[in-house]
Length: 602
Image 1: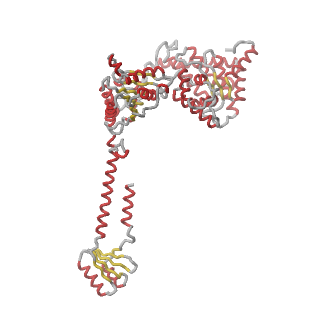
Image 2: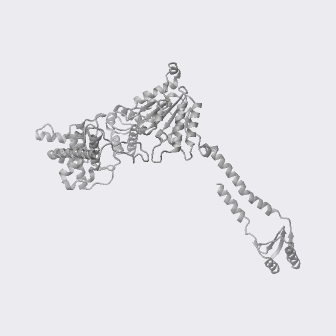
Image 3: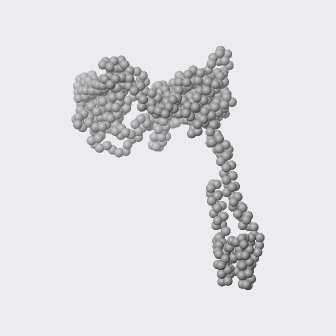
Protein backbone atom coordinates (compact mmCIF):
# COMPACT_ATOMS: atom_id res chain seq x y z
CA UNK A 1 0.00 0.00 0.00
CA UNK A 2 2.83 2.40 0.82
CA UNK A 3 4.50 1.74 -2.52
CA UNK A 4 1.20 2.29 -4.32
CA UNK A 5 0.72 5.64 -2.54
CA UNK A 6 4.22 6.76 -3.44
CA UNK A 7 3.65 5.88 -7.10
CA UNK A 8 0.36 7.81 -7.08
CA UNK A 9 1.98 10.98 -5.72
CA UNK A 10 4.82 10.73 -8.23
CA UNK A 11 2.47 10.35 -11.18
CA UNK A 12 0.24 13.14 -9.93
CA UNK A 13 3.23 15.44 -9.44
CA UNK A 14 4.49 14.79 -12.94
CA UNK A 15 1.27 14.77 -14.95
CA UNK A 16 -1.37 16.19 -12.66
CA UNK A 17 -0.92 19.78 -14.02
CA UNK A 18 -1.84 19.04 -17.62
CA UNK A 19 0.59 19.73 -20.51
CA UNK A 20 4.00 20.72 -19.08
CA UNK A 21 5.60 24.05 -20.19
CA UNK A 22 8.00 23.93 -23.15
CA UNK A 23 11.49 25.31 -22.54
CA UNK A 24 12.83 27.28 -25.54
CA UNK A 25 15.78 29.49 -26.43
CA UNK A 26 15.71 33.30 -26.26
CA UNK A 27 15.71 33.82 -30.03
CA UNK A 28 12.78 31.41 -30.40
CA UNK A 29 10.90 33.25 -27.67
CA UNK A 30 11.42 36.61 -29.40
CA UNK A 31 10.36 35.15 -32.76
CA UNK A 32 7.15 33.73 -31.22
CA UNK A 33 6.41 37.21 -29.85
CA UNK A 34 6.88 38.80 -33.28
CA UNK A 35 4.74 36.12 -34.96
CA UNK A 36 1.94 36.64 -32.44
CA UNK A 37 2.17 33.11 -31.01
CA UNK A 38 2.95 34.54 -27.55
CA UNK A 39 0.51 37.21 -26.37
CA UNK A 40 1.27 37.26 -22.63
CA UNK A 41 4.67 37.39 -20.90
CA UNK A 42 4.76 36.54 -17.18
CA UNK A 43 7.91 37.31 -15.20
CA UNK A 44 8.20 35.56 -11.83
CA UNK A 45 11.56 35.46 -10.14
CA UNK A 46 14.15 33.97 -12.48
CA UNK A 47 11.50 32.38 -14.71
CA UNK A 48 10.00 34.07 -17.77
CA UNK A 49 6.88 32.37 -19.09
CA UNK A 50 5.19 33.12 -22.37
CA UNK A 51 1.55 32.12 -22.82
CA UNK A 52 0.55 31.41 -26.39
CA UNK A 53 -2.73 31.97 -28.13
CA UNK A 54 -3.54 28.23 -27.70
CA UNK A 55 -2.83 28.36 -23.95
CA UNK A 56 0.50 26.56 -24.28
CA UNK A 57 3.28 27.87 -22.00
CA UNK A 58 6.85 28.56 -23.15
CA UNK A 59 9.57 29.01 -20.53
CA UNK A 60 13.01 30.64 -20.45
CA UNK A 61 15.09 29.97 -17.35
CA UNK A 62 17.46 32.85 -16.75
CA UNK A 63 19.35 34.36 -13.89
CA UNK A 64 20.48 37.54 -15.73
CA UNK A 65 18.69 40.86 -15.84
CA UNK A 66 19.92 41.41 -19.43
CA UNK A 67 17.60 38.71 -20.79
CA UNK A 68 14.66 40.21 -18.93
CA UNK A 69 15.49 43.65 -20.34
CA UNK A 70 15.59 42.30 -23.91
CA UNK A 71 12.19 40.66 -23.54
CA UNK A 72 10.66 43.71 -21.88
CA UNK A 73 12.04 45.95 -24.63
CA UNK A 74 10.60 43.65 -27.29
CA UNK A 75 7.24 43.59 -25.52
CA UNK A 76 7.13 47.36 -25.49
CA UNK A 77 7.81 47.44 -29.23
CA UNK A 78 5.03 44.95 -29.85
CA UNK A 79 1.94 46.57 -28.48
CA UNK A 80 -0.09 43.32 -28.69
CA UNK A 81 1.98 41.61 -25.96
CA UNK A 82 0.97 42.07 -22.33
CA UNK A 83 3.61 41.84 -19.57
CA UNK A 84 2.76 40.56 -16.07
CA UNK A 85 5.27 40.73 -13.24
CA UNK A 86 4.56 38.92 -9.97
CA UNK A 87 6.29 37.29 -7.06
CA UNK A 88 4.97 33.74 -7.63
CA UNK A 89 5.75 31.38 -4.76
CA UNK A 90 3.37 28.56 -5.73
CA UNK A 91 6.11 26.57 -7.45
CA UNK A 92 8.34 27.02 -4.43
CA UNK A 93 5.69 25.60 -2.10
CA UNK A 94 4.92 22.78 -4.51
CA UNK A 95 8.58 21.78 -4.75
CA UNK A 96 8.90 21.82 -0.97
CA UNK A 97 5.81 19.62 -0.72
CA UNK A 98 7.09 17.15 -3.31
CA UNK A 99 10.45 16.93 -1.60
CA UNK A 100 8.79 16.31 1.76
CA UNK A 101 6.49 13.48 0.60
CA UNK A 102 9.23 10.77 0.24
CA UNK A 103 10.62 11.70 3.65
CA UNK A 104 7.15 11.49 5.20
CA UNK A 105 6.42 8.13 3.59
CA UNK A 106 9.80 6.78 4.71
CA UNK A 107 9.07 7.82 8.31
CA UNK A 108 5.64 6.14 8.15
CA UNK A 109 7.23 2.97 6.73
CA UNK A 110 9.83 2.86 9.51
CA UNK A 111 7.13 3.30 12.19
CA UNK A 112 5.03 0.56 10.58
CA UNK A 113 7.96 -1.90 10.44
CA UNK A 114 8.92 -1.13 14.03
CA UNK A 115 5.40 -1.84 15.23
CA UNK A 116 5.34 -5.08 13.26
CA UNK A 117 8.65 -6.25 14.70
CA UNK A 118 7.71 -5.28 18.24
CA UNK A 119 4.50 -7.29 18.05
CA UNK A 120 2.01 -4.39 17.86
CA UNK A 121 -1.23 -4.87 16.00
CA UNK A 122 -1.06 -8.66 16.03
CA UNK A 123 2.33 -8.79 14.35
CA UNK A 124 4.04 -10.66 17.17
CA UNK A 125 6.41 -13.56 16.66
CA UNK A 126 8.73 -11.64 14.33
CA UNK A 127 12.15 -10.04 14.72
CA UNK A 128 11.77 -8.59 18.24
CA UNK A 129 9.52 -11.44 19.40
CA UNK A 130 11.70 -14.32 18.23
CA UNK A 131 12.71 -14.92 21.83
CA UNK A 132 9.08 -15.26 22.92
CA UNK A 133 7.77 -18.78 23.34
CA UNK A 134 5.15 -19.90 20.82
CA UNK A 135 3.46 -22.14 23.37
CA UNK A 136 -0.33 -21.94 23.46
CA UNK A 137 -1.65 -21.30 26.94
CA UNK A 138 -5.02 -22.74 27.98
CA UNK A 139 -6.32 -21.13 31.18
CA UNK A 140 -10.10 -20.91 31.55
CA UNK A 141 -10.59 -22.69 28.24
CA UNK A 142 -8.61 -25.82 28.94
CA UNK A 143 -8.83 -28.72 26.47
CA UNK A 144 -12.37 -30.14 26.94
CA UNK A 145 -10.99 -33.66 27.09
CA UNK A 146 -10.98 -36.04 30.04
CA UNK A 147 -9.83 -39.59 30.62
CA UNK A 148 -13.34 -40.75 29.69
CA UNK A 149 -12.54 -39.71 26.12
CA UNK A 150 -9.43 -41.92 26.07
CA UNK A 151 -9.73 -45.66 25.49
CA UNK A 152 -7.33 -48.46 24.73
CA UNK A 153 -4.55 -47.09 26.96
CA UNK A 154 -5.59 -48.08 30.48
CA UNK A 155 -2.04 -48.51 31.81
CA UNK A 156 -0.98 -45.11 30.48
CA UNK A 157 -4.06 -43.49 32.02
CA UNK A 158 -3.23 -45.04 35.38
CA UNK A 159 0.27 -43.55 35.29
CA UNK A 160 -1.03 -40.10 34.40
CA UNK A 161 -3.77 -40.18 37.04
CA UNK A 162 -0.97 -40.02 39.60
CA UNK A 163 0.24 -36.80 37.99
CA UNK A 164 -3.28 -35.38 38.13
CA UNK A 165 -3.60 -36.34 41.78
CA UNK A 166 -0.34 -34.56 42.60
CA UNK A 167 -1.53 -31.37 40.95
CA UNK A 168 -4.84 -31.55 42.82
CA UNK A 169 -3.51 -32.70 46.21
CA UNK A 170 0.20 -31.79 46.47
CA UNK A 171 0.09 -31.73 50.29
CA UNK A 172 -0.47 -35.50 50.43
CA UNK A 173 2.83 -36.14 48.67
CA UNK A 174 4.80 -33.43 50.48
CA UNK A 175 3.76 -34.87 53.85
CA UNK A 176 5.35 -38.21 52.99
CA UNK A 177 8.41 -36.66 51.36
CA UNK A 178 7.50 -38.14 47.98
CA UNK A 179 8.84 -36.49 44.85
CA UNK A 180 6.51 -36.44 41.91
CA UNK A 181 8.17 -37.04 38.53
CA UNK A 182 9.29 -33.76 36.96
CA UNK A 183 8.74 -35.09 33.49
CA UNK A 184 6.68 -37.84 31.88
CA UNK A 185 7.66 -39.05 28.41
CA UNK A 186 4.85 -40.56 26.35
CA UNK A 187 6.31 -43.08 23.93
CA UNK A 188 4.52 -44.98 21.20
CA UNK A 189 3.74 -45.35 17.50
CA UNK A 190 2.00 -42.51 15.65
CA UNK A 191 -1.73 -42.18 16.16
CA UNK A 192 -1.97 -44.11 19.43
CA UNK A 193 -3.17 -41.17 21.54
CA UNK A 194 -0.10 -39.57 23.12
CA UNK A 195 -1.27 -36.00 22.48
CA UNK A 196 -4.82 -36.92 23.47
CA UNK A 197 -3.57 -38.29 26.80
CA UNK A 198 -1.68 -35.06 27.50
CA UNK A 199 -4.78 -32.98 26.78
CA UNK A 200 -6.89 -35.29 28.95
CA UNK A 201 -4.38 -34.91 31.80
CA UNK A 202 -4.72 -31.13 31.63
CA UNK A 203 -8.50 -31.39 31.45
CA UNK A 204 -8.65 -33.66 34.50
CA UNK A 205 -6.17 -31.66 36.59
CA UNK A 206 -7.89 -28.33 35.94
CA UNK A 207 -4.60 -26.41 35.77
CA UNK A 208 -3.09 -24.12 33.10
CA UNK A 209 -1.84 -26.08 30.12
CA UNK A 210 1.02 -24.97 27.85
CA UNK A 211 1.16 -26.74 24.49
CA UNK A 212 4.11 -26.38 22.11
CA UNK A 213 5.71 -28.41 19.32
CA UNK A 214 9.39 -29.29 19.48
CA UNK A 215 9.94 -27.81 16.04
CA UNK A 216 8.72 -24.36 17.21
CA UNK A 217 11.84 -23.83 19.32
CA UNK A 218 14.40 -23.89 16.52
CA UNK A 219 14.60 -20.92 14.14
CA UNK A 220 16.98 -19.43 11.60
CA UNK A 221 18.83 -17.24 14.10
CA UNK A 222 21.23 -18.79 16.60
CA UNK A 223 20.12 -18.46 20.21
CA UNK A 224 16.42 -18.05 19.48
CA UNK A 225 15.53 -21.61 20.54
CA UNK A 226 17.29 -21.29 23.90
CA UNK A 227 15.58 -17.93 24.52
CA UNK A 228 12.19 -19.47 23.75
CA UNK A 229 12.83 -22.29 26.21
CA UNK A 230 13.70 -19.75 28.93
CA UNK A 231 10.58 -17.72 28.16
CA UNK A 232 8.38 -20.84 28.22
CA UNK A 233 9.51 -21.85 31.69
CA UNK A 234 9.29 -18.26 32.95
CA UNK A 235 5.64 -18.23 31.91
CA UNK A 236 5.13 -21.67 33.44
CA UNK A 237 6.49 -20.51 36.81
CA UNK A 238 4.04 -17.59 36.79
CA UNK A 239 1.11 -19.98 36.23
CA UNK A 240 2.27 -22.84 38.47
CA UNK A 241 0.94 -25.39 39.17
CA UNK A 242 0.67 -26.16 35.47
CA UNK A 243 1.46 -28.67 32.74
CA UNK A 244 3.93 -28.01 29.93
CA UNK A 245 3.36 -30.32 26.96
CA UNK A 246 6.06 -30.60 24.27
CA UNK A 247 4.82 -32.56 21.27
CA UNK A 248 7.33 -34.32 19.00
CA UNK A 249 10.18 -33.57 21.38
CA UNK A 250 12.59 -35.51 19.16
CA UNK A 251 12.72 -32.41 16.92
CA UNK A 252 14.72 -30.62 19.63
CA UNK A 253 15.89 -33.44 21.89
CA UNK A 254 17.90 -35.55 19.44
CA UNK A 255 21.20 -37.04 20.47
CA UNK A 256 23.90 -34.35 20.41
CA UNK A 257 26.86 -34.57 18.05
CA UNK A 258 25.11 -36.81 15.52
CA UNK A 259 25.69 -36.78 11.79
CA UNK A 260 28.51 -36.15 9.35
CA UNK A 261 28.73 -32.47 10.23
CA UNK A 262 29.16 -33.15 13.92
CA UNK A 263 25.84 -31.67 15.01
CA UNK A 264 23.50 -28.73 14.79
CA UNK A 265 24.64 -25.83 16.97
CA UNK A 266 21.28 -24.08 17.26
CA UNK A 267 19.38 -27.27 18.11
CA UNK A 268 22.03 -28.32 20.61
CA UNK A 269 21.92 -24.92 22.33
CA UNK A 270 18.16 -25.27 22.59
CA UNK A 271 18.50 -28.78 24.04
CA UNK A 272 21.12 -27.61 26.54
CA UNK A 273 18.79 -24.85 27.74
CA UNK A 274 15.93 -27.35 28.05
CA UNK A 275 18.15 -29.62 30.16
CA UNK A 276 19.07 -26.71 32.43
CA UNK A 277 15.47 -25.58 32.85
CA UNK A 278 14.16 -29.07 33.63
CA UNK A 279 16.88 -29.57 36.22
CA UNK A 280 16.40 -26.07 37.61
CA UNK A 281 12.92 -26.11 39.10
CA UNK A 282 12.49 -27.91 42.40
CA UNK A 283 10.31 -30.92 43.08
CA UNK A 284 7.42 -28.91 44.49
CA UNK A 285 7.35 -26.10 41.94
CA UNK A 286 4.16 -27.53 40.45
CA UNK A 287 5.51 -27.61 36.89
CA UNK A 288 5.17 -30.99 35.22
CA UNK A 289 6.56 -31.52 31.74
CA UNK A 290 4.77 -33.96 29.46
CA UNK A 291 6.45 -34.83 26.18
CA UNK A 292 5.49 -37.11 23.30
CA UNK A 293 7.65 -38.90 20.75
CA UNK A 294 7.56 -41.96 18.53
CA UNK A 295 11.38 -42.07 18.36
CA UNK A 296 12.69 -42.48 21.93
CA UNK A 297 15.81 -44.21 20.61
CA UNK A 298 17.18 -40.96 19.15
CA UNK A 299 16.69 -38.81 22.26
CA UNK A 300 19.72 -37.56 24.15
CA UNK A 301 20.48 -39.71 27.24
CA UNK A 302 20.80 -36.59 29.41
CA UNK A 303 17.18 -35.78 28.64
CA UNK A 304 15.97 -39.21 29.75
CA UNK A 305 17.82 -39.46 33.04
CA UNK A 306 15.94 -39.42 36.38
CA UNK A 307 15.37 -35.86 37.50
CA UNK A 308 14.24 -34.75 34.06
CA UNK A 309 12.02 -37.33 32.43
CA UNK A 310 11.73 -39.71 35.35
CA UNK A 311 8.92 -41.76 33.91
CA UNK A 312 8.43 -43.29 30.49
CA UNK A 313 4.87 -44.26 29.63
CA UNK A 314 4.39 -46.55 26.63
CA UNK A 315 1.26 -45.85 24.58
CA UNK A 316 1.07 -48.86 22.27
CA UNK A 317 -1.46 -50.13 19.75
CA UNK A 318 -4.73 -51.03 21.51
CA UNK A 319 -5.76 -54.62 22.08
CA UNK A 320 -9.14 -56.01 21.05
CA UNK A 321 -10.97 -54.61 24.06
CA UNK A 322 -9.26 -51.26 23.58
CA UNK A 323 -10.21 -51.15 19.90
CA UNK A 324 -13.79 -51.94 20.81
CA UNK A 325 -13.95 -49.03 23.28
CA UNK A 326 -12.28 -46.63 20.83
CA UNK A 327 -14.78 -47.56 18.12
CA UNK A 328 -17.65 -46.98 20.55
CA UNK A 329 -16.27 -43.54 21.46
CA UNK A 330 -16.05 -42.49 17.81
CA UNK A 331 -19.52 -43.90 17.09
CA UNK A 332 -21.07 -41.57 19.67
CA UNK A 333 -23.52 -39.17 18.11
CA UNK A 334 -23.54 -41.04 14.79
CA UNK A 335 -26.61 -42.93 13.51
CA UNK A 336 -25.00 -46.38 13.56
CA UNK A 337 -27.34 -49.23 12.62
CA UNK A 338 -28.13 -51.83 15.28
CA UNK A 339 -26.76 -54.59 13.01
CA UNK A 340 -23.21 -53.22 13.29
CA UNK A 341 -21.16 -55.68 15.34
CA UNK A 342 -18.39 -53.83 17.17
CA UNK A 343 -16.79 -57.13 18.22
CA UNK A 344 -16.34 -58.16 14.58
CA UNK A 345 -14.89 -54.75 13.72
CA UNK A 346 -12.47 -55.04 16.64
CA UNK A 347 -11.38 -58.47 15.36
CA UNK A 348 -10.84 -57.13 11.84
CA UNK A 349 -8.76 -54.14 12.89
CA UNK A 350 -5.77 -55.83 14.53
CA UNK A 351 -2.80 -53.44 14.43
CA UNK A 352 -4.96 -50.32 14.00
CA UNK A 353 -4.09 -47.27 16.07
CA UNK A 354 -6.66 -44.96 17.63
CA UNK A 355 -6.27 -42.54 14.72
CA UNK A 356 -6.80 -45.39 12.24
CA UNK A 357 -10.01 -46.41 14.00
CA UNK A 358 -11.28 -42.82 14.01
CA UNK A 359 -10.57 -42.64 10.29
CA UNK A 360 -12.36 -45.96 9.74
CA UNK A 361 -15.55 -44.70 11.41
CA UNK A 362 -15.38 -41.44 9.46
CA UNK A 363 -14.90 -43.26 6.14
CA UNK A 364 -17.90 -45.47 6.92
CA UNK A 365 -20.01 -42.38 7.61
CA UNK A 366 -18.86 -40.81 4.33
CA UNK A 367 -19.74 -43.96 2.39
CA UNK A 368 -23.21 -44.07 3.98
CA UNK A 369 -23.79 -40.40 3.14
CA UNK A 370 -22.65 -41.01 -0.44
CA UNK A 371 -25.31 -43.71 -0.74
CA UNK A 372 -27.98 -41.40 0.77
CA UNK A 373 -28.56 -43.64 3.78
CA UNK A 374 -29.98 -42.49 7.11
CA UNK A 375 -27.84 -44.91 9.14
CA UNK A 376 -24.35 -46.42 8.89
CA UNK A 377 -24.53 -50.13 8.10
CA UNK A 378 -22.07 -52.96 8.70
CA UNK A 379 -21.32 -53.15 4.98
CA UNK A 380 -20.22 -49.50 5.12
CA UNK A 381 -17.69 -50.35 7.82
CA UNK A 382 -16.44 -53.37 5.85
CA UNK A 383 -16.01 -51.34 2.68
CA UNK A 384 -14.35 -48.54 4.66
CA UNK A 385 -11.94 -51.10 6.16
CA UNK A 386 -10.96 -52.35 2.71
CA UNK A 387 -10.59 -48.79 1.46
CA UNK A 388 -8.33 -47.84 4.39
CA UNK A 389 -5.94 -50.79 4.09
CA UNK A 390 -5.99 -51.35 0.31
CA UNK A 391 -7.30 -48.17 -1.29
CA UNK A 392 -10.46 -47.33 -3.24
CA UNK A 393 -12.00 -49.61 -5.83
CA UNK A 394 -10.74 -49.23 -9.37
CA UNK A 395 -13.30 -48.55 -12.07
CA UNK A 396 -11.42 -50.28 -14.86
CA UNK A 397 -12.23 -53.90 -15.63
CA UNK A 398 -9.59 -56.62 -15.89
CA UNK A 399 -9.01 -58.57 -19.08
CA UNK A 400 -10.45 -62.06 -18.90
CA UNK A 401 -6.94 -63.53 -18.89
CA UNK A 402 -5.84 -61.23 -16.04
CA UNK A 403 -9.03 -61.98 -14.15
CA UNK A 404 -8.38 -65.73 -14.44
CA UNK A 405 -4.75 -65.41 -13.30
CA UNK A 406 -5.79 -63.23 -10.34
CA UNK A 407 -8.54 -65.69 -9.38
CA UNK A 408 -6.11 -68.63 -9.29
CA UNK A 409 -3.53 -66.50 -7.46
CA UNK A 410 -5.96 -65.58 -4.67
CA UNK A 411 -7.44 -69.09 -4.63
CA UNK A 412 -3.92 -70.42 -4.04
CA UNK A 413 -3.45 -68.13 -1.03
CA UNK A 414 -6.84 -69.06 0.43
CA UNK A 415 -6.50 -72.82 -0.09
CA UNK A 416 -3.01 -73.01 1.42
CA UNK A 417 -4.20 -71.01 4.44
CA UNK A 418 -6.94 -73.60 4.89
CA UNK A 419 -4.60 -76.56 4.43
CA UNK A 420 -1.91 -75.51 6.92
CA UNK A 421 -2.57 -75.99 10.64
CA UNK A 422 -1.58 -72.53 11.86
CA UNK A 423 -3.33 -69.72 10.03
CA UNK A 424 -5.73 -66.91 10.88
CA UNK A 425 -9.37 -67.35 9.80
CA UNK A 426 -10.21 -65.94 6.38
CA UNK A 427 -12.76 -63.12 6.30
CA UNK A 428 -13.06 -62.51 2.56
CA UNK A 429 -11.47 -63.37 -0.79
CA UNK A 430 -11.81 -60.84 -3.60
CA UNK A 431 -10.55 -60.24 -7.12
CA UNK A 432 -11.98 -56.71 -7.26
CA UNK A 433 -8.98 -54.39 -7.84
CA UNK A 434 -8.28 -51.96 -5.00
CA UNK A 435 -5.40 -49.53 -4.82
CA UNK A 436 -2.30 -51.32 -6.11
CA UNK A 437 -3.76 -54.81 -5.57
CA UNK A 438 -5.62 -56.78 -8.23
CA UNK A 439 -7.05 -59.08 -5.57
CA UNK A 440 -6.65 -59.97 -1.91
CA UNK A 441 -7.36 -62.48 0.83
CA UNK A 442 -8.44 -60.71 4.01
CA UNK A 443 -7.68 -62.42 7.31
CA UNK A 444 -9.66 -62.09 10.54
CA UNK A 445 -7.28 -62.81 13.45
CA UNK A 446 -9.05 -64.51 16.33
CA UNK A 447 -6.89 -62.75 18.94
CA UNK A 448 -4.00 -60.34 19.40
CA UNK A 449 -0.71 -62.19 19.09
CA UNK A 450 2.66 -61.29 20.56
CA UNK A 451 4.75 -64.44 20.07
CA UNK A 452 4.82 -66.84 17.13
CA UNK A 453 6.32 -70.31 17.04
CA UNK A 454 8.66 -71.55 14.32
CA UNK A 455 6.00 -73.76 12.76
CA UNK A 456 3.52 -70.85 12.72
CA UNK A 457 6.00 -68.65 10.87
CA UNK A 458 6.68 -71.42 8.34
CA UNK A 459 2.93 -71.79 7.76
CA UNK A 460 2.69 -68.03 7.26
CA UNK A 461 5.46 -68.18 4.64
CA UNK A 462 3.60 -71.05 2.95
CA UNK A 463 0.43 -68.96 2.79
CA UNK A 464 2.35 -66.07 1.21
CA UNK A 465 3.81 -68.37 -1.45
CA UNK A 466 0.42 -69.90 -2.30
CA UNK A 467 -0.38 -67.33 -5.00
CA UNK A 468 2.86 -67.72 -6.97
CA UNK A 469 2.78 -71.52 -6.71
CA UNK A 470 -0.83 -71.62 -7.93
CA UNK A 471 0.17 -69.63 -11.02
CA UNK A 472 2.97 -72.12 -11.76
CA UNK A 473 0.78 -75.20 -11.18
CA UNK A 474 -2.03 -73.95 -13.44
CA UNK A 475 -0.30 -71.87 -16.12
CA UNK A 476 3.23 -73.31 -16.13
CA UNK A 477 6.58 -71.98 -14.94
CA UNK A 478 7.08 -69.77 -17.99
CA UNK A 479 3.75 -67.99 -17.43
CA UNK A 480 4.17 -66.84 -13.83
CA UNK A 481 3.42 -63.13 -13.36
CA UNK A 482 4.65 -60.13 -11.38
CA UNK A 483 1.63 -60.25 -9.08
CA UNK A 484 3.55 -62.05 -6.34
CA UNK A 485 6.07 -59.23 -5.74
CA UNK A 486 4.76 -58.19 -2.33
CA UNK A 487 4.18 -61.82 -1.28
CA UNK A 488 7.79 -62.76 -2.08
CA UNK A 489 9.11 -59.68 -0.30
CA UNK A 490 7.21 -60.48 2.90
CA UNK A 491 8.08 -64.19 2.76
CA UNK A 492 11.79 -63.43 2.29
CA UNK A 493 11.70 -60.89 5.12
CA UNK A 494 10.17 -63.46 7.49
CA UNK A 495 12.71 -66.10 6.49
CA UNK A 496 15.63 -63.70 7.06
CA UNK A 497 14.29 -62.65 10.45
CA UNK A 498 14.04 -66.32 11.43
CA UNK A 499 17.78 -66.62 10.80
CA UNK A 500 19.33 -63.33 11.93
CA UNK A 501 16.92 -62.12 14.63
CA UNK A 502 15.04 -65.05 16.10
CA UNK A 503 17.76 -67.72 16.04
CA UNK A 504 15.59 -70.38 14.35
CA UNK A 505 18.27 -71.90 12.11
CA UNK A 506 19.96 -75.15 13.12
CA UNK A 507 23.02 -74.30 10.99
CA UNK A 508 23.52 -70.70 12.21
CA UNK A 509 22.34 -71.43 15.72
CA UNK A 510 20.56 -69.29 18.35
CA UNK A 511 22.35 -66.03 17.53
CA UNK A 512 21.25 -62.45 16.89
CA UNK A 513 23.01 -61.34 13.72
CA UNK A 514 21.00 -58.31 12.65
CA UNK A 515 22.93 -55.32 11.36
CA UNK A 516 23.54 -52.65 13.98
CA UNK A 517 20.95 -49.89 13.68
CA UNK A 518 21.85 -46.40 14.78
CA UNK A 519 19.81 -43.22 14.88
CA UNK A 520 18.50 -41.99 11.57
CA UNK A 521 20.79 -39.00 11.13
CA UNK A 522 22.76 -37.78 8.16
CA UNK A 523 25.79 -40.02 8.11
CA UNK A 524 24.58 -42.57 10.63
CA UNK A 525 23.07 -44.81 7.97
CA UNK A 526 26.38 -44.73 6.11
CA UNK A 527 28.12 -45.92 9.25
CA UNK A 528 25.97 -49.05 9.67
CA UNK A 529 27.97 -52.24 9.90
CA UNK A 530 27.50 -55.99 10.11
CA UNK A 531 28.59 -57.87 13.18
CA UNK A 532 29.33 -61.06 11.23
CA UNK A 533 31.78 -62.18 8.57
CA UNK A 534 31.28 -62.64 4.84
CA UNK A 535 31.26 -66.42 5.23
CA UNK A 536 28.44 -66.10 7.79
CA UNK A 537 26.59 -63.80 5.37
CA UNK A 538 26.77 -66.54 2.73
CA UNK A 539 25.40 -69.05 5.24
CA UNK A 540 22.54 -66.67 6.06
CA UNK A 541 21.67 -66.26 2.38
CA UNK A 542 21.80 -70.03 1.90
CA UNK A 543 19.52 -70.62 4.91
CA UNK A 544 17.01 -68.02 3.71
CA UNK A 545 16.91 -69.69 0.30
CA UNK A 546 16.54 -73.13 1.89
CA UNK A 547 13.54 -72.04 3.98
CA UNK A 548 11.83 -70.39 1.02
CA UNK A 549 12.42 -73.32 -1.35
CA UNK A 550 11.31 -75.92 1.22
CA UNK A 551 8.02 -74.09 1.72
CA UNK A 552 7.69 -73.56 -2.04
CA UNK A 553 7.95 -77.31 -2.68
CA UNK A 554 5.59 -78.02 0.22
CA UNK A 555 2.95 -75.64 -1.14
CA UNK A 556 3.35 -76.97 -4.68
CA UNK A 557 2.72 -80.50 -3.43
CA UNK A 558 -0.41 -79.32 -1.55
CA UNK A 559 -1.91 -77.58 -4.56
CA UNK A 560 -1.13 -80.39 -7.00
CA UNK A 561 -2.82 -82.90 -4.68
CA UNK A 562 -5.84 -80.60 -4.24
CA UNK A 563 -6.03 -79.24 -7.79
CA UNK A 564 -9.78 -79.93 -7.94
CA UNK A 565 -10.32 -77.64 -4.93
CA UNK A 566 -8.10 -74.96 -6.44
CA UNK A 567 -10.04 -75.05 -9.73
CA UNK A 568 -13.45 -74.77 -8.08
CA UNK A 569 -12.41 -71.92 -5.76
CA UNK A 570 -10.93 -70.01 -8.69
CA UNK A 571 -14.00 -70.63 -10.87
CA UNK A 572 -16.29 -69.37 -8.09
CA UNK A 573 -14.16 -66.25 -7.78
CA UNK A 574 -14.32 -65.63 -11.54
CA UNK A 575 -18.13 -65.84 -11.39
CA UNK A 576 -18.79 -63.95 -8.14
CA UNK A 577 -15.57 -61.91 -7.73
CA UNK A 578 -16.00 -62.07 -3.92
CA UNK A 579 -16.12 -65.08 -1.58
CA UNK A 580 -16.70 -65.39 2.15
CA UNK A 581 -15.06 -67.91 4.44
CA UNK A 582 -18.36 -69.78 4.69
CA UNK A 583 -18.51 -70.28 0.91
CA UNK A 584 -14.89 -71.43 0.92
CA UNK A 585 -15.58 -73.94 3.70
CA UNK A 586 -18.61 -75.29 1.83
CA UNK A 587 -16.49 -76.03 -1.25
CA UNK A 588 -13.88 -77.83 0.85
CA UNK A 589 -16.52 -79.83 2.78
CA UNK A 590 -18.24 -80.84 -0.45
CA UNK A 591 -15.05 -82.33 -1.87
CA UNK A 592 -14.19 -84.01 1.42
CA UNK A 593 -17.59 -85.73 1.33
CA UNK A 594 -17.04 -86.87 -2.25
CA UNK A 595 -13.63 -88.34 -1.38
CA UNK A 596 -14.89 -89.92 1.85
CA UNK A 597 -12.18 -88.18 3.88
CA UNK A 598 -12.37 -85.84 6.86
CA UNK A 599 -9.89 -83.27 5.57
CA UNK A 600 -8.14 -82.20 2.35
CA UNK A 601 -4.88 -83.84 1.38
CA UNK A 602 -1.82 -82.02 2.75
